[in-house]
Length: 226
Length: 412
Image 1: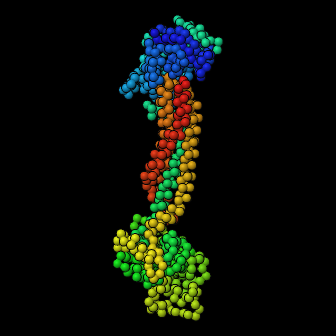
Image 2: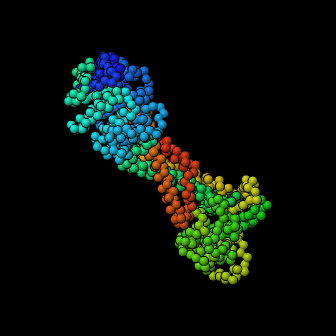
Image 3: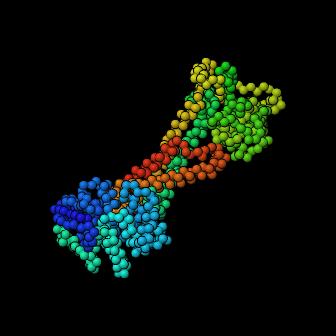
């Protein structure tokens, strides 16, 4: 299983009576592509932070690729995330003052223990497959177009060949045409690499790209807090 | 990657970072500058007299004796009999002796009667002896050697005739105008009170007072200069004298002997000890300067802390992104500390660099106009320690914003 949640409960602060998230049972299979929708403030970002191990649940178990995150130290969770989970956001996908190569290199930096620093060739090859023009490799990414930035973000997310890719509203900043191109490329990529995809959005029109569509309010028993 | 991230992040916020670096640089400049000047003045002050083992005057406090004999400030309490001087100077333990006779002045500069031994044996700083920039030591009774500042300020050159005034006032009415002196030598600048002295021979002092009684010129009694020169002109008394001993081991013995001298009450002081005592009295000023410079530094640190703290708020997304890519909260903490350290290192470089160039530029000016010899070697042990302290203090000041970033990182 790519993701398995059981008896998960989370709340900010200490008010355990009214948790933000309360998920008895939920899972995503290996290589599965799942679309989760829910209005803003429903706990989507919190769920994603729990899955990536940045936050830890008050109760219950989060397991990613068969590894229970609760069994890892916070440092091990950081390393695990770097190695196994790719992440794409709506905005701020990239460190604006670094160039494309450094942004991707950053992801390598935090992954496997001792990567030889001569990963530049790999990075350049990857950027090329994502259709990023060579003249843009060494410019600060803030000078590039949104579409280019999103493609560099996918390259960054995929450089460590993660088994799970989490996409958090990645299309909100794109127009209709770019959004369709982006979705096509993304789905084609995860299918090719057999990566599980968890796609979170409030935009129901994107649901048509996915076989499995879950509403967060259905999974989350805490509900009614929207 | 870590260093690159810190460096790029700072470059990305050029405006606020440059201002912070400037504030820090100024404070480093002040901090190091004050410390450097303090050490240099102290050294130059302590070097006002060197190579002199003992200074002897009529019984008085050691500071008073030092002030009037070396700094030519204040008035001597009493004179020393010429015979006492001769007896002590002829002791086997004494290598050389320089008599000093004070009491007259020239346009506010004090006149010092002495012998040519003064130019031979007196030294200052790191045992530098007196050098003539022009001319030579006095030879005749009415020859005068000027300190560099006297010559410069009054615009005198060799051969000029000057008239000494009785007493120490700047506008004395009793002039020794019947016996003018001729400038035969001008000394190099030393940065010590020597620069402000007018040197004449003891005979010269004797000659201009020969027809004076009780500090008043006697009308009617007129001795011609020719008659004067024919006389022996041995002084009856002097103000003080400096001693060089054959062995400095004997210093305390000789000092005790002089202090217990039977024929008249005398005081002998070790100039180094008395100078250190005098310097200690200026400790308050020293500490005030240090306090002010550290306050300036603290203000700059607070500025840095505020700038960093404000930046964390703008960088919440960036911090979250770094976390998602795999950075630990500790990495975020260290990143902010690293940025602060880079700022402090650059500031130290700029601060110390500009201090060095400022000293280099001012060196000539300071030594010619004030006789202040300020070295440019600012990398003293104390200053290196200060630089280390600047880095440590910066890391401490950045701890708050770094911790803030750590907490932001932790909460996702």
